[in-house]
Amino acid sequence: MWMSGQEPDAVKRRLGEVVRALADASRASRDALNLVPSENRLSPMASSVLGTDFYHRYFFNDGLDPGFWQFRGGQSVGFLETELTKSSLGRLAGAELVNVRPISGMSAMVLALSGLGGPPGGHVLCIHPDHGGHYATGSVARRLGFGVSLLPVRMGAVDDTELRTALRTHRPKLVYLDLQNSRQILDVTAVVEAVRAESPSTLVHVDCSHSLGLILGGAHPNPLDDGADTIGGSTHKTFPGPHKGVLMTRRSELARAITEAQFTLLSSHHFAETLALGVAATEFTVFGGAYAAQTVANARRFETGLAEAGFDVVLEGGRATKNHQVWVRIGDAAATDAIAGALYEGQIRVNVQVDLPGVPGPALRLGVNELTFTGAREESMELLVQAFMVARDGDAGKVARLAQDIREAAGRPFWFEPDDGNGLDLAVAALANDHPWEGGPTVAGD
Ligand SMILES: Cc1ncc(COP(=O)(O)O)c(C=O)c1O
Image 1: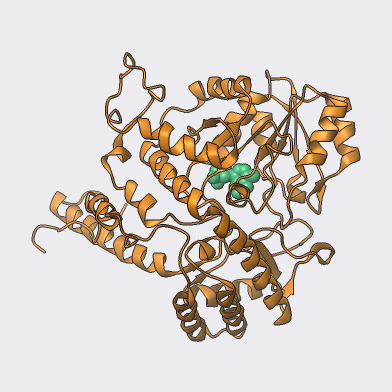
Image 2: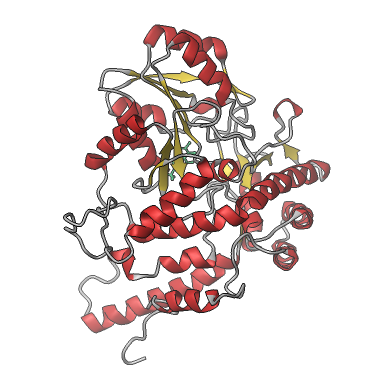
């Protein structure tokens, strides 16, 4: 350990250096263009909430019961969990019952499987990881004591024959649709039809971690309208919220089942993040529609541009992407790493995956969601294609210049700017100033 055994003053000075270096790295990271499809960023307003005192507090009394203030730190703002966070998410999803206790997509998965999967010993169906399902779902379900069948998915459609056979054979309590690696829209209606015909008491849950922002922004159909019983997932992929999770339903008995499971599986739900989620969701009620449509339009422009530039773009069945993801094969691991490295040096971050469905070997799994949220339009996608072309030649300097052009080409971001008026600038600055770490602490003797 590099600090063990040192004098407190030396440790303090060293930590001061670390925090200052972190602040510098954070500023640089904030300026980078991020194409990781499972990440997004917070708006300035939502972000400012994370620096408040509520980051340190528990909040359990979501019913605002006057006799249940065992933890009082969140009492003054607790109503916002219902009136801002749940109400905005519920309005966006058309779901009255919203659970914002999960701290991430995996946490929402554990709660949904436990609450909706029935007693241990039952059976759960989910999507095969080789067909784009989340790698962990089957294993989590087995740890919870369920038998598991993995379903194939092609072009966004669950294999109907295998689904119906599994429904008749196992009478599962739950079909958990966890499509993660896909460029298509999952056909939920067909799954619901098969379930209602073959095993009517089986529940359908859609884990839309990747597509939540596209669904809540109206670019993808809402699975609840297509007959799913519950939906949920991460709030930080296409949905531009904090690292959190959510579960939503229109059926009160299912909301109760989730709450019961949650009571003993989750304690701290990260209160400041929950409030930031409320701000993000409320901004999304204004900007979400335009953002979601622009995200899909940008992904298509980017995908087409890369193909025209000679990149080996993955187009299953010749179909253009229908969401935020664009997949590109570069070559072997060394070639993939080389282009990813040149892009990184030029301040563009990409995501390498080795197990995309139908794509043996390494490939880039790219997402335009965060870039779109910050204001990128089609023009930026053309510049981005140029950046990939010069990265292919290993020219990180030219990548950096194009990254700057992309930043400058950005249009209006899909959030309220602090200078939008109405004193918002002052409100955001006041919250930001509440945060003592910007620039790192002053160290005595410096
Ligand atoms: C379908 C699905 N479920 C769960 C998760 C896990 O989410 P998190 O990383 O927020 O825990 C993901 C992440 O990609 C996902 O795609």
